[in-house]
Amino acid sequence: MNPAIFLTLLLSFTSDLLAQDPGMEAIGSMSVQLIFATNGDPKAAGDLAKKMTGAEIKKIQAIKELKFEAYRLLGSDKPDILKGYESWATPLRPSKEILVSFQPIKRNGDEKIQMVLEYWQSKRKVFSTNPILTKGKTLFLLGPEWRKGRLILAVKIEDLKKS
Amino acid sequence: MNFFRWVTSKQLMAPAGASPDAGAGDQEVPDRKLIKACQSGDTRAFETLVTRHRGKVYAMVQNMIKNEADAWDLSQEVFLKVWKALPKFEARAKFSTWLYRITHNVVYDWLRKRKIDSAGELDDGILNQADIAAGSRTSPSVTARPDQALVNSELGDRINAALATLNAEHRETILLREVQGFDYKEIAKVMGCSLGTVMSRLYYARKKLQALLSDEKRKD
Amino acid sequence: MPVKNSKPYSVMKKEKTEELFVKWIDGLLTSEEEVQLAALVKDDPGIEAGLQEMKVFGETMKSEIPGSVEPPYGDFFNSKLMRKVDLQIQSQRPAKKAERWRQSMRWAWAPAGALALVLSFFAGHRLARPADPGVAQVEKRSDRMSELPTVYFTGESLEAKVISDSLGNVSAIVVNGLSAISDDIDFVTVNTSASLPESYESSEARRFH
Image (cartoon, rainbow over all chains, first blue to last red; front, top):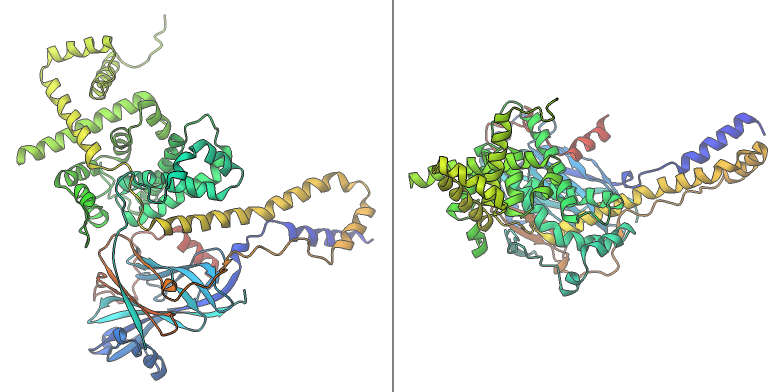
């Protein structure tokens, strides 16, 4: 056998057996949006805030506690969901004022996954929760007050590999 | 149709020393047997060990850094390090001393990192008053229980405030002695220092607390 | 004759005195040390009152500061920790396998040609087992209410309301009592004070470097 081929085979073989971290595998992605909701002037959200679509607003307003007059999208992030590690979403990047961390705990079939979700504000963990999230379904977290309105986090599994 | 339920906030703090998950069966198995099982890879034994000792670790970390959110995470870190280091643990050593040694290292790493982040703000007490107010166990709770009320007593507040004025080494020494009941040798092992240093730190810490608390008493 | 202890006498005396005081408070003086302390007290009667006060404060500390406090949400504490332990175990398995393989191959190097044949045979196969799933499967389906999340707070007095739809899926969590974000904060200027956990930095490094 050609020594070069032999060496190539040897190297490719051993690389399979070198230590791999299964936890680093991305099993999906999560979108985290930060929304400003107000019964006052939505322009208070600032120039960088974007208008939201009717369909998006309708979805939020379907929940009585989240019903406001106006909504603006402040920012979003879409990190991977890692099999074994915590991921962080920075929806207001570069600002780290509001952060969300999440890590899978349990798989509930192909479409659902239970997560540990942590809400961080001003660089302190404020609360954590363990929801079962369904792919494509948004979980809303009604957060703190800001500029005469409230901040709402919209968390949704965008993609999820089959279990 | 939407369904909903109210979940009121609560801090699930059991009475000091209690281990809610520890049943009669758990008490029968001594630490050394659990440790041996852990060293063979038995994670259930490890979880029993965690349940048994997490209260002491959490209390120690909390007393040192006065920050509940971080104390929770640091306590996790302690036990994860314990799991990783258990293969090296020698049966003849005392588990609690070893456990507190790891706790000491984790706390000091956190304090060092915090010092780097907030360079120049530290005085004799690592923590400033704002930190104590934000992270203190004595912050008001919606549902205060009788044992919580004891911890929240005025004297308890004074002692906590006085402790916070000590530097980390003095605070740790006196906590290990007065609260955890360690003897001088054990304290020296936990803190990685000599017996003479333990004595000196104990003396200094007691003297300072006496000076502060006597002053408080006189003002009353 | 060289002096073994290089400390000045005054320092040694101070250390010894401190030791006596500490041991008296802890009730651990030997009879010889009691005599030594008595001599000191005789010279300065104020010492005893001070030591007595220190003793009382020490005892008060013991009663006021609990030596054991269950971390909030103990079941969650354990489950999160055991998850990390499981991941730690899994991450070590491929490395141990690789090490065992390397050890076993050391003596097999002699006939290079035969080795090449062996390797070329295996080249088309994955010998590494697929990584164990890092997320456990749920064996039983829980009832509707128990599938709703719990909310854990980290020290502040907050209230949470968990809202689910008719299928029992959580749709919103309303948290009241959170500190308001200052109106001055515009989310454009970066707040650099205080650090975030290492896992945040690792997560950012993975994504952007």
